Amino acid sequence: MIGIALAGYGTVGQGVMDLFQKRKESIQKRLGKKIDICYILVRDSRKKRDIDLYGAELVCDIKKILDDDDIKILIEATGDITLGYKLIKEALTKKKHVITANKAVLSLHLEELSALAEEQDVYLLYEASVGGGMPLIKPLQDLSLHGEIRSLRGLLSGSCNYVLSKMRIEQIPYDDVLEEAKNLGFLEADPIDDVGGFDTRRKLRILATLAFRGKIEEDDISLEGITKIEQEDISRLFQMGYAVRLVAQAFKENQCVQATVHPMALPITDFLRSIDKAENGVEFFGDHFIKVCFQGSGAGRYPTAHAMLSDLEDVLFSLRRKTSPLGSKELHIIPYQKKARYYVRSAVPTLFAIEEQIDEKVWITTPVAHNVLKENLPEGAVAIAIGE
Ligand SMILES: NC(=O)c1ccc[n+]([C@@H]2O[C@H](COP(=O)([O-])OP(=O)(O)OC[C@H]3O[C@@H](n4cnc5c(N)ncnc54)[C@H](OP(=O)(O)O)[C@@H]3O)[C@@H](O)[C@H]2O)c1
Image (cartoon, rainbow, N blue to C red; front, side):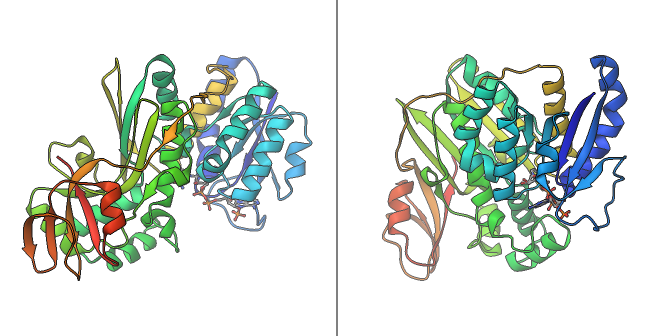
């Protein structure tokens, strides 16, 4: 029997158990071996759960999992940075395969954990960490291994997409949409991780590192979230033919990388503009494959659990390489300098050359480099790059 431990029995963990039970018979038949989830790690063992435990032992001590030699695979879905890191590291050290959705841990320790997995000759898979149910990491690893990826751009936060779409479609103010999104479970009680763009930046750090086969860290990525955008900005830009989205972008030229997360006004012709509500979308551009686009459910119990189950099958059937997917290219990170026209709303006049004045506080600038704009933007001003 191949023993599996599941860490975390919240939104994702319970989805993993549910899908595991539905697919277990079929996997066992194909594999010719028994498999089972033997332990579930939680913080509070008395909490009521939606999904049955199916005979798994509920534990609060990670030693139970780590010290059991029959546990060959750890599925980590806790979201806890300290615990997640310790658990993943020790599991790999004990030659257990690891599947994780923990983008925060991966963003901080991707290189170290990938090297450890390779050294221990076990899998470290993390399809669910970016793009939820959308297969993204696996195809990206293939694309980057067999060709040169030049750039990528994407909408990586279903929550931000939901907030921005709702503000436009229903013309509701930012604060009201935020409250509604929290009540519906699209946003955490403290939503800054999402609306501040931090979550998107972590995902871009992971994608760009895999795409360009060299290390790109969170601090290398310039960041502006959606917290300052008001409904009037969205409406004005929509009247001009644009939809506002939080866009993550990175590109590489002669080993120099520029990466950013910032709000953009996208024209009707832009693929990312068609990604509405809580969906995610990503496009990769490369030498030979030219362009590849992905669109799908970026989060949620079953899409995310599905991604973890796909990783589980890849581990069980040895369908992937165990070597680290990260490259060792020496990359130079430079500030994001791409020029764009900007929609600027500011209480004080802007210093930038103006293409059009919309009203006494709102201007469209002539094309200006992103880093120059950021450095010279007046306090409290809102700037939204206009996509061409
Ligand atoms: N939710 C999504 O749609 C989604 C999508 C993509 C990726 N992810 C990632 O998936 C992971 C899990 O997210 P989630 O939404 O399922 O979170 P969640 O609903 O808050 O569940 C977290 C689970 O982990 C357990 N846990 C947390 N800290 C722990 C600790 N220190 N010791 C033991 N158990 C601990 C909790 O135990 P208790 O139940 O006892 O509190 C809970 O069962 C995160 O890394 C997240 O970024 C989530």
